[in-house]
Amino acid sequence: VQLQASGGGLVQAGGSLRLSCAASGRAGRTFNSYAMGWFRQAPGKEREFVAAITWDGGSTDYADSVKGRFTISRDNAKNTVYLQMNSLQPEDTAVYYCVQDHSIRSETPARTWGQGTLVTVSS
Image 1 (tube, rainbow, N blue to C red):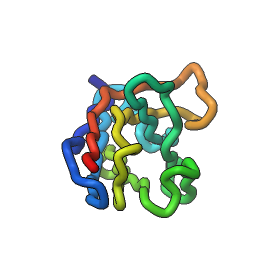
Image 2 (tube, rainbow, N blue to C red; image 1 turned 120 degrees about the vertical axis):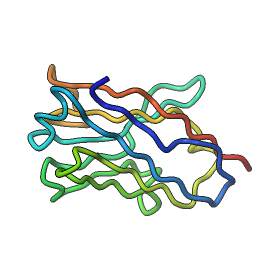
Image 3 (cartoon, rainbow, N blue to C red; image 1 turned 60 degrees about the horizontal axis):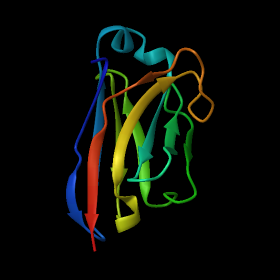
Image 4 (cartoon, rainbow, N blue to C red; image 1 turned 60 degrees about the vertical axis):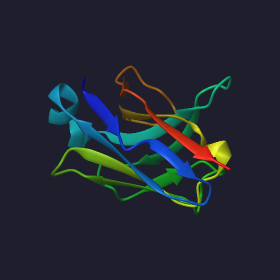
């Protein structure tokens, strides 16, 4: 597994979780060269973009639905990207996937998907 996501779980509405995604293998060796991002897929829904961060952490991008509540960050020394999720709501319930690519909103042939981690928000 080149991108291993972790940190999901069950949380009450209004609570917080911090997801991590650690890169290894080829994804780890090239970690500093790529943007990183998060997508999510709720039951019965299409996968959707959540957040992205440039290779150097200098720029971030968020879906409107999470702006102001979620924060993406990365530690290139640890080959890890994070997603801090605050003020969680039941509609945030989904499997969250990390991704490595040159561009996050627009997929390129270089894209690598990580394993998902389940976030469940109870009302």
